[in-house]
Amino acid sequence: MTIQTENATQFDDRESCHQWINDRVVRFKLRMMKSRTETPGKFTYVPRKEQGQIVNTLDEGFKESGTDEPLSNYAAPVKKDDKWLAVMQMQE
Image (tube, rainbow, N blue to C red; front, side, top):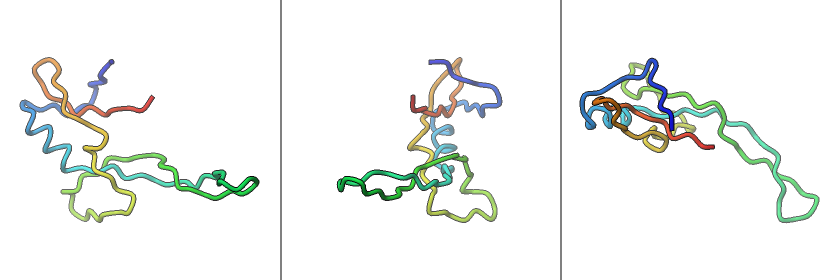
């Protein structure tokens, strides 16, 4: 696994990195996708997550959205070269 470190916020300890992750959410845009049902020839529409953006919950004016999910669902602290980074776990 290659870790992209350009423009990454680095931390001296794991706790600081973990707190940074906990103070953020991923805000998704939803797209309705056509999906088959159990009945042959019938379809329904289900929401699909698209375009996630990391949002700081401590920023002034932050308002929670129904599409927000904790960043901790997608990132974890990882130590690299004596520094801690919040690393996103990408789906392949």
